[in-house]
Length: 302
Ligand SMILES: [Zn+2]
Image 1 (cartoon, rainbow, N blue to C red):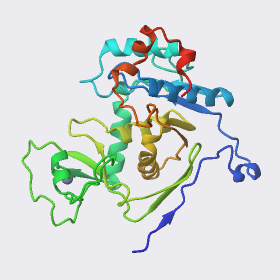
Image 2: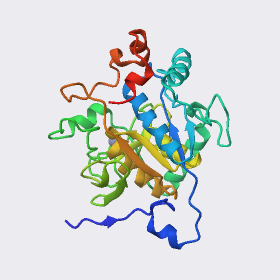
Image 3: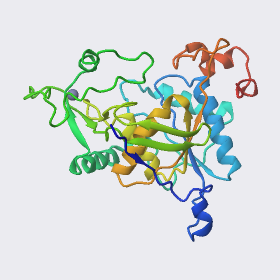
Image 4: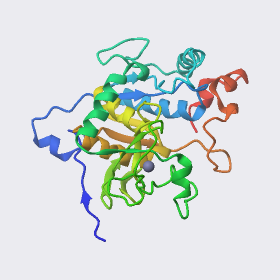
């Protein structure tokens, strides 16, 4: 099998050799903090936000706070209030956000549904996505040997147009999600600001992924791409668990005709034995640490 390789064109990045000889003016740095108020802010996220803030400050940039509150069943108003309080306590400050306004408002995802609908319509019109009625169990069952530690199971392609396994008909009440059809065998490359050159093969390292959920909301991958593009974000700083998602998102940027930002993936917070701490480890909620008498300056560095 030959694998196609496609280089993704960066925007007029500050480090790009091209930009020195062109007349393009480098875009001013715009970073973002994107907490999801489905629980109390966790130390791991706060540390990543701290890095994001340092990078924005170093480049005299703007930091945007985006409230990722799409999952209304899990986001509670109490968590939103706690989120602002915890971020401020940790020493984080932003120039644009739901509480401050700004030129790219609204900054809460629950108020941006029209943007996501426009994007999924565009993807449907251009044939990048197809409807899928598989449940998570269906996907797992179809896999001969799911790999442990995979971020999500490789989709077996059951509902892909042309697949012999494609269900002939479905009950009208069957929940439908929309999957992005990845170009099998294509290598998606990018240079990470922290981890250096990255390469992931579509159809091997990740499969067709959900961009629209059966509950009629955008999936994470689509929402962040639409928002980062619309908000003019020039660098995304986030945890290393999302490296592979960046490859997926590169494909989305291209399908939507948008230039991707730069990426900087931070090492994940681990315990003394190097084991990654679970996202919902309550003992590492910032407010629990604060109640134990710890100060922000004790917690910012790993
Ligand atoms: Zn399916």
